Length: 77
Image (cartoon, rainbow, N blue to C red; front, side, top):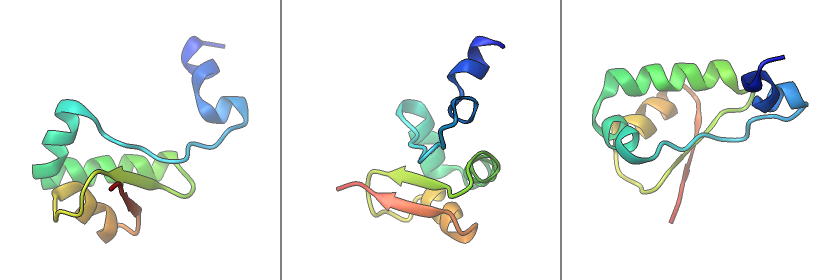
């Protein structure tokens, strides 16, 4: 078993709860619709009940693409 497999939540019988982009990735996903859509697709493939945490209520690319794909967006206040 590799280190990655040991650390993967599903390998330990756990379920990934949410994802939250940080730093430059947050900045890019705020404005790039194509990348945001690809990110959402990856999240849907990794999680049975996907959720994306986003820090504000803007109409940014990632929350917009997530909602279009039926992925829950949790806005942090």
